[in-house]
Length: 64
Image (cartoon, rainbow, N blue to C red; front, side, top):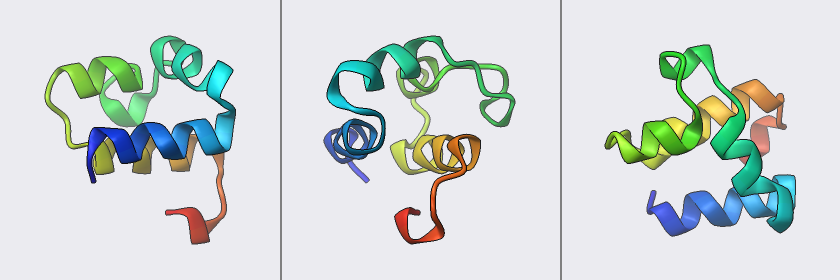
């Protein structure tokens, strides 16, 4: 998954205005106590970060 695909999914599920705020402020234990932005900046694979967001937000399995 590319970073652009990750952000497209975030925008679709959280809204374009809220996705980046949520990704920059919501700390997830599944990402080692980091936000999505911190994980991406540290080089984490966007697919791994998306899976963490997916699990945290309780999104439908079809959106994995």
